[in-house]
Amino acid sequence: MFDLLRFPGDLLAEYDRLHRELDHLFGSTPAAIRATTRGAFPAINIGSTPQTVEIYAFLPGVDPAQLDVSVERGLLTISGERRNDWTSDEKRAIHARERFTGQFKRTFSLPEDVDQNQVEAHYRDGILRIVAAKLEASLPRRIEIK
Amino acid sequence: MTENRNVTTQPGRAETQADPARQVVLMPPVDVLEDAEGITLIADLPGVNKEGLSVRVNANTLTIEGEARIEMPAELAPLYVEVRSVRYQRSFTLNRDLDTNKIEAELKHGVLKLFLPKHDATKPRRIEIRAG
Image 1 (tube, chains in turn cyan, yellow):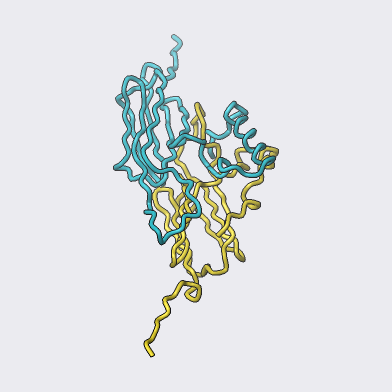
Image 2 (cartoon, rainbow over the protein chains, first blue to last red; image 1 turned 180 degrees about the vertical axis):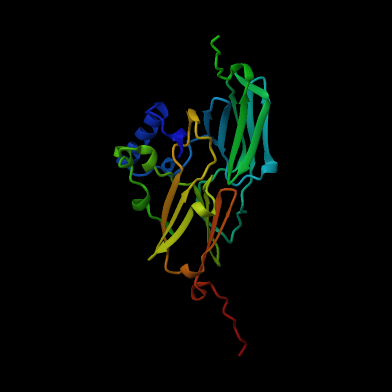
């Protein structure tokens, strides 16, 4: 189902593997209990189809009204804030606090063949899906043989 | 409540499987809080909806399993990938003072919130002192 995930061993996968092996050797480190890539929130997957470029941002528990997606000169920026769902007080013991809270911002460049005026974003079940249409001129065409 | 790492982390083992994309299980980040009433566990499970979620208690082990169901076009080719699995799993060992028959679960925007209440008998009580 998740074609994006069937990636031949690239650098990131190698790094992940190395990390897991080290965890195995030395016991679990705090980093091992994080499901997303260390240091980056939201985690992002990008894929393309012949007509579109699709960006999936893993943004659980964010109010869509607190999300901002913008495109400027080929740069796509996702920013917003994830508030803590709970408040700390004296009556409460905190046993684990691994989930990201606070402001976030990630920027990346869109491929050149993307039409900046045709970008759509949807938020569902904690995933922000951004679909950018490719420029018509860059779409594959069938050349007619006369 | 303590985490049951043996169940969830089997580093290296998944890598040796034929199809790593099917085997890799992500460990969701959690917040765990405790007050006089019970324990609140919050887990990030982006992409998981009600149908893809399972919360089980077996003896004194709580297991959360989820499968993200993400709408994607069939011909999508990867350009850049940070999240390489759609499966989440994590287990915890529960103390006996929690009432596992009364667990409440809520799932919204890919965040699971569980409340595990304590047995009434184990809740702190205020002892009234009567004047003699």
